[in-house]
Length: 62
Image (cartoon, rainbow, N blue to C red; front, side):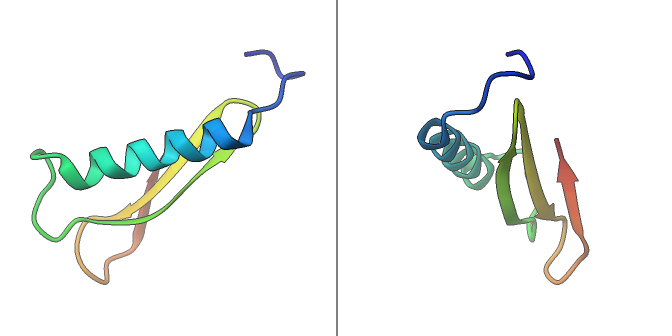
């Protein structure tokens, strides 16, 4: 995707929802890991925030 294109917001929302569902369903996560937030940063990056333990700091992936 070039920087002149914009992300289709309904698709972006679906994408983040799918990542969130995968996060919750993954057997690879440690007990206590929790989803904090997710969103799309135009033009072509998803940002996912999570905690590795309850009450822990927010960590992220782009």
